Image 1 (cartoon, helix red, strand yellow):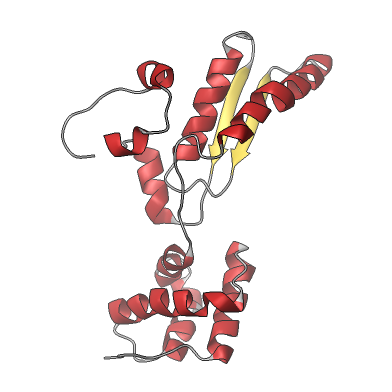
Image 2: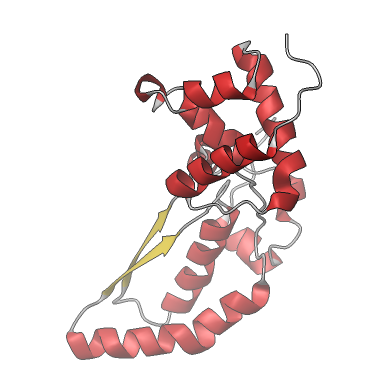
Length: 188
């Protein structure tokens, strides 16, 4: 079993290029130790002996939906929270939405489609949905659709469930908690 192996600069460059090509994530050289740690876990899980073997595995056409997905899950960072960057949501409702709605009115369109990329476990697109639903109460003739995506299948499963612990709700205004959430029991 591999113990204490370190990614070489060449291996780091190969993995970095693969990650950028397939996920658009740019890893700077100072992320080498982070990548080493995350890929070491995948080496142990796959019982491989070297980073070269692991690279060969994840670039194998047979693994495009197998270990390659686990590879992307391992290398992606999933930091999110409800109402993260509050100023962005305020700007959205005060400046962006009026402009978009004015253009939509002029074009006779009443459906808004918004893409939330890098959605992680869903807190940000759910925040977006709450903020926009609240904003659109004054404009009930508009329909809204939010498409939320992420490269990590692990966190997307959490987002699909939409179940969050009370500890995740700290930044959600009480008005929104009452209006848009249901309290459950037990573990999420």
